[in-house]
Length: 189
Image 1: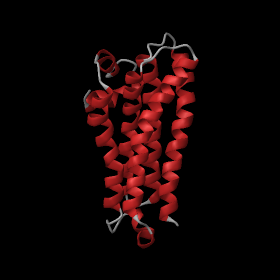
Image 2: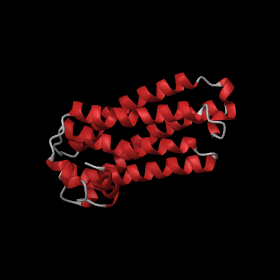
Image 3: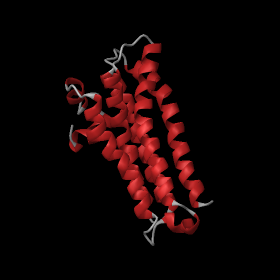
Image 4: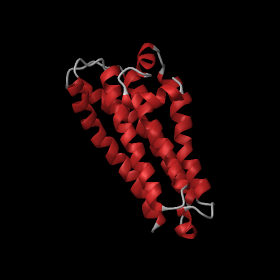
């Protein structure tokens, strides 16, 4: 999987996804090559942004321990991907759809990429742009989830992928909102 294919995946059931489905990606390899690097980006951006003079994160920087926040965020991200993989698998099993943890973990890892990239919004100079990029990341993740469910779980109908995606996305969006609220509370705490 490369960045060109990844950029097509939110808009297609085949571009990029066909490559993902035929590959046999061990969980540990997916973790080390995709989850870990992507999970490092938001904490590093938080730490950098907390020292950048034009960053929104500097609003309340004297009262905030950014190293602790970055560590909490990093651990939360590392836990979220396997939990989302488990959730996808559990929701599929509830509908009598067989799925391996390896496949659902890979799907959860791919879905996390736009969320991690949206953390670059923390470097923007105004809160509106920062939040806008976060929402855009969430929307791309939702589209990846929908298209990925259809292909990775080998579903026969798009409606089934949509129903599963709504179910999983509800939980994922809640986790994302809690992590985002944690940061915003630190900004205005």
